[in-house]
Structure formats: structure tokens, C-alpha cells
Image 1 (tube, rainbow over the protein chains, first blue to last red):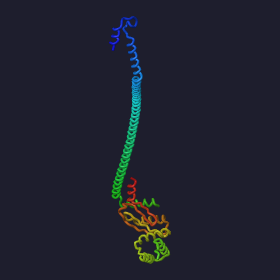
Image 2: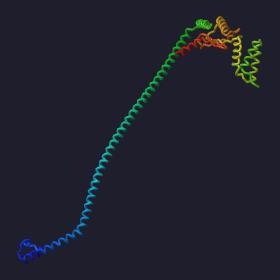
Image 3: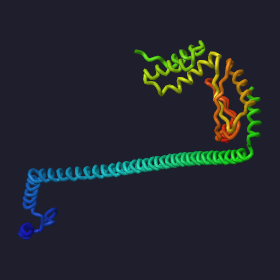
Image 4: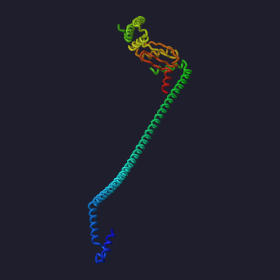
Length: 178
Length: 130
């Protein structure tokens, strides 16, 4: 394409001004017109769809970025929320654990108290039984002792108490009754 | 026909005896009632009731004396006097029995009271004290 102006320039004579640059005005105008036409064509039919496409693409990218940003924020919020939930769950777990520990300690204390009371009752019951048994043995021993004393006394009295002594005893009894 | 109560029969016998009826006749009448009513097993209790009636009316007290040895006349007189005074009766009848188990002393038992001064009873008291 550039050969043509050069040929036109070679065919013409050397000129001054713009001709000094070997520019063919007709060719220049033709090229300019062609350029303008191409420019108009591009502006009329090529650029608008291209711009529209690029705009859509840009919007899509912006939306994607916004969505990504929103997603990131949601993710951050979710992480924060999750951390809060985990923190709350941890606190709740700690509280539940403490409560459970407290309950278990209370149960242990109650169980110990109950066991102590039961042990005291068992000891008391055992002591009472021991006391009763001791009392029973003491009573039996006393009864046996009384029987021995009475038997010994009876034996001695039977040996010592002859008719004369019996008579004296009866006379004393009658005096007491009189 | 309603049966005569033992107490009524005892009162009837006591009345007749105190009225001076012959004792065997009274006994025969009372015995006939017991036989008629088939109550011969009540004879001992009836005698006790008659004694109670006689003693309660201040007439006769029948005393059962239990001792380990024979009492002798002197003691019998003393016992009669004692029972007569205590029971406030006109006459005292003594029934004696020798029982070696009493060891010593004596027991006087009338229809209304008992005096127990035996050694056996005192030994039993000793056992109870322990």
C-alpha cells in the first residue's frame, strides 16, 4: 500500500511545502477517507457490541468481585460466628462440666454423709445390742447367783433348823403377825 | 330350769348351818343339788365358798396350817387366837398338814386371807431380790 504514494511521488516533480514530504494529497485524502470510513464502521458496528461485551464482562467481573467479597465477608462472618459459637459452646461445656463436677461433688458429699449416718446407726445398734446382751448376761448371772445363794442358804437352814429351832421361828412369826 | 349359782348354794348352806341344822343333813342337801345339776366337780369350790360365807359373817373361820414339823398344842392355841382376832370370828377350826418343802416356819390360809411365814417363801423372796 505504501508503494503507491511512493510511485506517485516518483512520477511527479520535486515540490516545496508538503510536497517536500512526498505526500500525495489525493492518496492522503483517499487514505483518510478510508480511515474515517473504517473508523465510522468500527464505531457504528464494531465498537458498541465490543464495548457492551466489555461492559458486561466488567460488570460480571465486578459482580464476581462483589460476590467474592461478599462471600469472603460471609465467610469471615461465618468464621466469627463459628468462633463465637465455639466459644459459647466451650463456655457452656465448661459450665456444664463445672455443674456436673459440682453435682458429683454434692452427690459424693451426700453419699459420704449418708454412709456416715448409716455407719453411726450401725455402731449405735451394735452398741445397743451389746448393751442388751451385757444386761441379759448380767441378769442371768445375777439369777444364777441368787439361785446358788438360795440353794446354799436352804441347805444350811435344813441342816441347822431342827424342831426346836422351827418352833422358835414359828413363835417369832406369830408375834410379828399379832 | 335355771341352775342355782354356787354362791347362792353356799349362802344357803351357811344359813342352815348357822341356824343350827345338823351338818350332815345340810351336806346331803347341797350334795343332792350338785348331783342333780351334774356339778360334782364344783364340790371343792363350794366348800371354799361356804367357808368364805361363814368367815365373812364372823362365825367360823377354817384355817389350813402348813408347817414342816408338828406344831404342838401351845402353838395351836396361839394360832387359833391369832386367826380369831384377825378374822373377827367366834370360832376357829384348824386343819394341819406337814409339808417338808416349806423347810421351816408356817403358813396360815383361811377363806379370806393367807399368812405365809415359811422359810421356803423367804428363800423365794431372796431369789426375787436378786
